[in-house]
Image 1: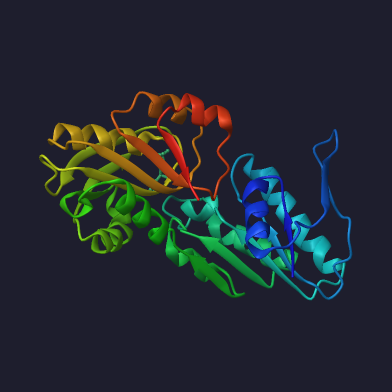
Image 2: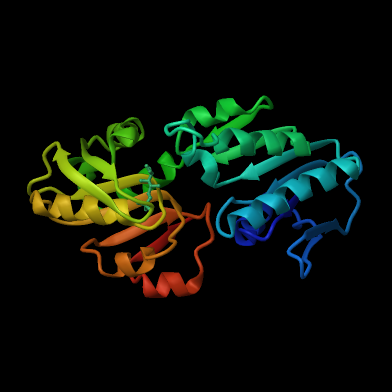
Length: 289
Ligand code: R5P
């Protein structure tokens, strides 16, 4: 078994290798002046069971291209099996044709990964779980629920008296599974997306008065959804607000917004590497491993 890493989350790839007691494989990626990318393996892959770790975080197009090249190069080097380990599959948000004349890019990206030669895909908390059906090769779709539940249970007293709050109706199923695990109540926000960076909360369905609230989501991108959810929860009488999501993408105004947020902490798992400066400026940001 050999594990290689793209540029997007080497820390996670290294952690995986440390846990397996193996050395991270040797590969090199270079970008030419014309933006073309070249990937080169510096060890033999012949007949190996190869795992390539690459999150589709920003710069997303470069990271996607690097992943495709790594898969293709591994197949050309006679690897026995290639598994694409994609801890964060950002294009899962584009899972349907909900406007005329757009692409279902979650499906297109799945096609590209398979055409490149992936035999298997391993991913975590897809925005829409159905996206794994866009692949014809086997997909292991992991969930961060246990990691998040353990964090809340071990760091917060009496979680069962709190309320799990989903930032929109689309996330109720996942939030409800977490609420069951915590033995806590459930609420959700009626959310409308106005633009990439702004959303509007039209109301909160459920009761959070005098309760601790655990805001959950699959990802925080610009933190527009989060800001609205926290405001609405506070206005409805929530006491302390904790935030726990799978993918801490933190782009655009996210870090600034989170620094100003009336929440105790904002946690994400390590599917996306959060740079040190974001952790410092975001003040209450935490990464769960
Ligand atoms: C969208 O429906 C997702 O579940 C997240 O709520 C969304 O991706 C978060 O994006 P942002 O942080 O930009 O509001």
